[in-house]
Amino acid sequence: MTGAGTACAILGLRHAGGGAAPPVSGNTRDAYLTIKNYSSRATINLKNYAVKDAAGNRFAFSAHHDLQPGDHVKLRGGRGNDSDTYNVVHRDNCAFPWNNDRDTIHLYKPSGSRSDVHAYTRGGPDSDRNGYIRFH
Image 1 (cartoon, rainbow, N blue to C red):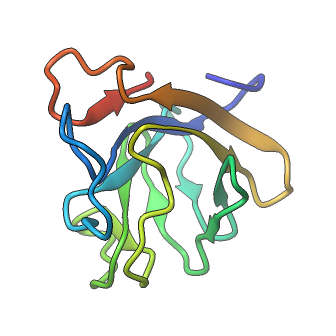
Image 2: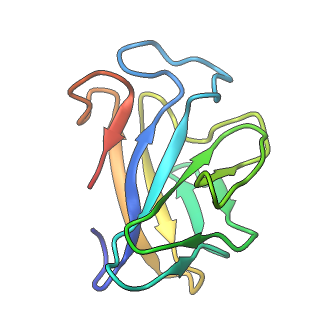
């Protein structure tokens, strides 16, 4: 994890191209970023946390979404119903901002300090070639 005392971090990412497939424009149905609460005691409210990529594309959690200790949330591209029960939040647009071939993802706390950061490439740590790159 990046940052001392960071409990909220990026667990992994499934890019829109999936595995060894070439990049697929607009294929956001199965693309997502997973954010996990690594704390064993504290609940984290994601309101005003922000995720950015290397190009400056940004998504900020505008609503309350509580992550219990050890819990995670999937941030998906596209439109859908956000749900604490099913641990999903949608970006509410048709594009998933993280590139299929490579990118850097930053997670920022509401204070603006960085909570976590990871860079990846298509040939990164995806041993089963399913498109999910696990960071932690």
